[in-house]
Image 1 (cartoon, rainbow, N blue to C red):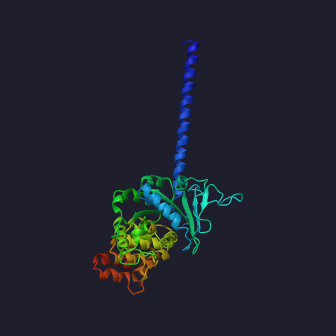
Image 2: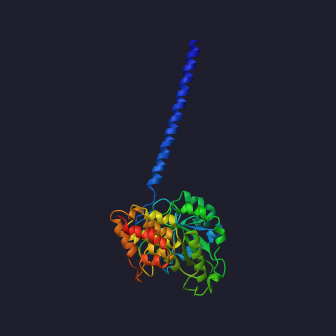
Image 3: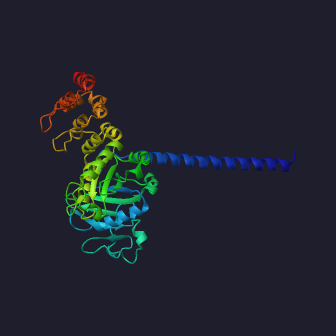
Length: 389
């Protein structure tokens, strides 16, 4: 072979080696990126104890873009009416994932092109610098004056729920409008959505909140057995249907009359604040609707405390295990009574206290189970727990 041929082969080998090195370098960078993303996804998994000073992020899903815009206008009007503890209402164009930054000193809230402050003093008119379409793509930020908790609320149509894959949120709220004077909800629209929604809800520490609501005053007045007019009292039929749908889909049912004032919204977000700050309250709500995934997510957390398991926030002082026993959700009861975390060491004393502690009417968990005739639970779960060790 000639010298020219040797040079050509050497040049080709050099090119091949360079190409391989580039491919290997790209692959290594790609691998590092994947590893970094994996580390981030693990580190951002929500802890049981969350920052009490952080903003509570909620996403409200509506059944269509038209309904979403209608609900958006209702929230914009009602939130800032000044008739409840809801205050400091803003409509922001800021990035959802970024921490909140107030307007700069050189620009007041009224002059800022990125946010619009709403309220009885400043009014709710749209500034000429922001188109209505832009405003509808923003999110609300407000606080509860009674506790100081700060919320973010984003409204999305169900057709855009894929955004939930990339957005972070603490609570997912599914809105169902009351369809008629019989108090029926527009459930059929969500019939085939629950499987996808449940996957989204696993990003959070609490189950989905199902929000049944009125937004039309002509529909809410004179409906049901109670006064649903100026005081916004929930209609009995709509509330009962929300509870039934909540049990069926393992979500937390709530009801709001959005036609009169922000008082129902204050009550809703007070509950959301309790869900955020008290894992025991989440356990209680999971017990009502038999949400096994989030119930286990909390009871299996290494940061679970005795206070969480013994949490009492209902009218008769039942803890979450008592509630699960009363509504015959035996899987939730047995998941605690048979949990290795409560059957070893000092935790066995906590389990004994749970079984024998009394609510405000003097009932114990053991008595509740016995009265229901669930002998298999007593002999297979309760007694072994008491005799363990």
